[in-house]
Length: 307
Length: 120
Image (cartoon, rainbow over all chains, first blue to last red; front, side):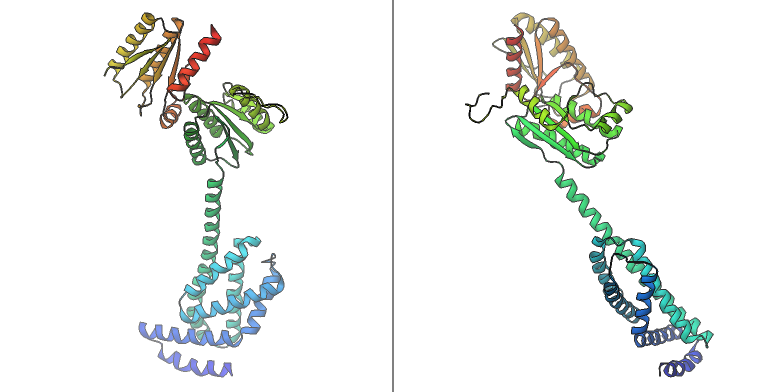
């Protein structure tokens, strides 16, 4: 049935081939024919695609049923994009799909891979259908290829954009969360640093600390870097600058939580930390700060003393 | 621009109220050291709260003042450096080594009385 209509349409199309406008129109006729073909063979092509995905070991984070369900909706969206020539719906779907599968650990190459597979599966079915009529196959492919390329592009770009958006959001969240300046006692501040310090964050950290020193009238600051995995020369130097700047505001800085690796690195780099007050852990740092401030912590049952 | 130098008990308080030219700085240095001698002060507080820029010459002069006053047997505390100024200074490598700093005038005076009482 399909074969018949396809061949019947093919004859006038070949005859009409001529000017540019005509060419465009025949292009759209061909595209319509193509869409009809894809609709007709939906079940079979979709299954073939899902099989190829499993075979290529893509989307391993998803179950077979899930792959098939996604394959179905991607297929339908794909055909619709081919038919209408508009990519908004597909774009929205790609974004939505990315949102769902990125947290499950699906990689960029997998998403690009499945779209290219679909392109391949469909092209093969076109080859099979039109193998008798080479001219017609050529013109069908003329209509199909640009649209298919654009679709593959749209999906891949949508996926990458979604990924980048997530990364940006997370970076912002980390930046906002990670630099609290806490007052633990009258005139004693704690600055716990966690995670990676880049130059921008280091700068922000210093600004926040200096402002905190002034508003809380702090005399002693404990900077705890237990949560810093690695430290390079730039960051170490910045730490020295921060200590010096704090001193200009009249605050003493105690650095705690230097891991053996960081200590080793700093010695190797040759950063001068001699003027820095370092204590092994946060508890020791707070105890020393209390001594500097004249506090004395006594058990609850005894009357409290200190200034 | 003249920098007022006030006597407060055993200490002197000098409040810098606007950016000083190099000539002003030299004049200030001479006046302050003279006052320390005349008043037999045990400490000096230099207040920089209203300064929003600090150049290397000003910094060097302050360091010289502190060293000279130490030779006279008194102590110097610099107070009121703004956070932005402090950060800009360390970034440019301008250091105030061996000069005591404090947050504000109150802190500076407390620091001086603590040091003169424990040192005496």
